[in-house]
Length: 543
Image (cartoon, rainbow, N blue to C red; front, side, top):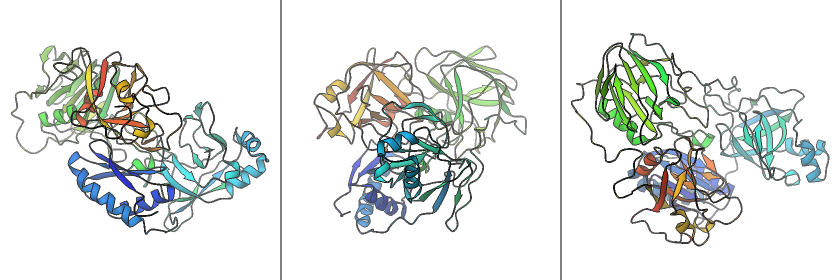
């Protein structure tokens, strides 16, 4: 890699994307970046041809920009070969695609096994699930392409390949890779440190065995694999001092969420956290909690909570009719709840998610540094059920908040003044202008509706297709608010539980405040994606 090979560009308001010529350059830049991570950088995510740098706040990006450019310059002199931990993974080669790969290669299944197991692979980057790591170095003779139609179910532990990459599926999921065999190696375990058996930079060998057994790491200092990943813990805990919140009713979905996870995106663990960050932070501020205190995220209302011990609570986000023992209470203001009282939330007229904060925060065992439920990764406390009891923490030092009510700039879920019947979300140009055809931005601005398959992972939008060229983009990092365009042309806006990487081009990224607004839209709501004021398209396609 020469010093001029790495281009660093903005990726939304809180991230940078480093474009590189090949995977060797990615590894070199990734090593250079990790050697000296400045304050404000929360994740560094290598991918097939890029490295994503994610910052805590927009104010951290300029400092990170200079640091990333310096790392690219330093990496130009880095010719070091991979020197990571060697992990040996036992494989029983009995996969249902083994014969098909042999036919594609014009050889025997024994030869496919020998060629797959006879190489040392480099762990290149994390994938779409925790512990899914892409391994480069597949023998070209057996580099069969992925299936034309993906399977809806691939068993956990499946060892598979797709072109010049191979990997192990950590858990059951959909997938289109060719299945060669299976392993009992626990690829990801939240109770292990580090949680991923294989991380970017590691070296991997597959060892043929007759039975499915656990893996072992052979380099000095490497730990043996621990037990298979533990099921997500229930968020319910009994309060030792009697102070707690008992779940009487949940509504459609009731989750514990905080400010999310950082530092694990490289092994496929996304940030998660509250879908509407601004409303979550507001609730914490009203009751005097720290910004990262755990609170409840109520989807479409319907929750009922019994309080054991007097409490101070706040309701923010989607406005709901609410009452304490039948007495109406308001939004965005501190509410005193007596011992034994029942807080009921009705259904919001607009918006989707309401946040319930309790002074002192909810005491839940953290998983990988956060008490948030990641619905895509299956990490964190499980969705709450009636009968669960959450302990309440010790109130922070200081006096009770004196605020009567906190003004909010708009009601979540409602169009802003002048927007009439559709919410207008502002989009900054993305990094892949060359993937879009003339007229793409005009089509993006068309009136759209939110589809029923939207969730905490993504807001999926119907309406006019955005024209893009055919093909598949090499997987690269994704950020909150990224507007991805799959082959059907219908935009997907990624939210809190997004995958870490993706293979569809990103036309733009929502402004941070508008991602919170997107998280409050419900199926059937109408929305317009509009180029952000003051943002030029530059060389973006089809202005």
